Length: 130
Image (cartoon, rainbow, N blue to C red; front, side, top):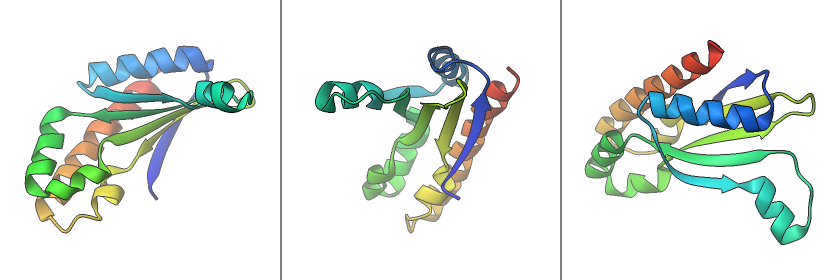
């Protein structure tokens, strides 16, 4: 499976703030933030529920991956999706770095992917406590 997720019984805006806090607490940096809801409204005049794609990374791990396999950068950063559900809750889905970085032939990258997954699972554990 290419992702794992957690559902928060929180409105989308609150869940976004909670997610950002959890990422920061676990020392993740957010290097990209694509607000799909806003893009669809601005470009197509489509009303769409809350839907955002974040690119998150730990710079140290990302550097080690790039050092081990320079082309593995096409597989970075780790994507995190936060989306609003019909019942007013929020789902946060995390890209599984083991699956994605498993495309690299580098054993070092595979080891680092497992480390990144454990770091993301720490974010999930933090969110599940809410």
